[in-house]
Image 1 (cartoon, rainbow, N blue to C red):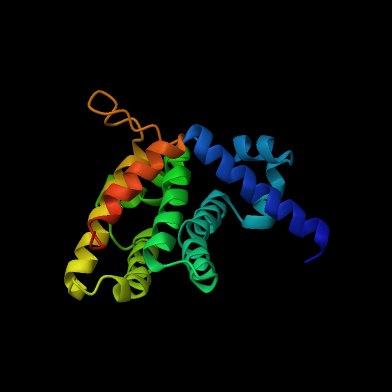
Image 2: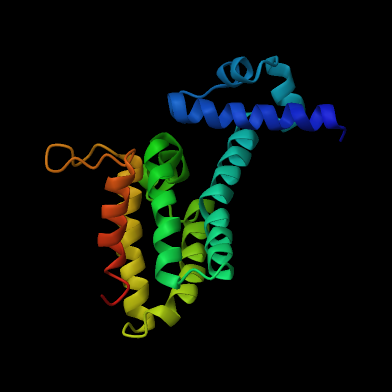
Length: 199
């Protein structure tokens, strides 16, 4: 595949992600994607053989960003001399900021679970594999927790994070959690990390 074709494919995938975030998965159609990517609809069929394959690739790319980059960033921080807790809090701050900015992407990741209670999808597999890898990286800094307790704590942190990622204004009447502000993200992360690390 030449550079021009690869650029068109990449532009279409980016446009698909933008449409999903702006309009939601159900409202994202071939015409909207083509308009966003500035290509004709036939190009989508040519490169991806239809909407389902394109949506699947777009979701896969956002899952790579959501999970793969976090572990890489964590490892880079650790290699740079940052402690386990500080590295965890730094990447969690970033995750909190990103997930609450893109609620429709988060909903698209977990659509099959939310709509059909189907737990076989790629997002579920990636989430659980990610948490398993993260638990192994955090274990040396949490010797007071058994493996099961550490996994439970991570499940608690990610449960609340996933809920807020899909519904960022859920608790506004109770407490304003404006994750656009660094102060709020840091306060939430500090509170969440207490589930894992001894004070």
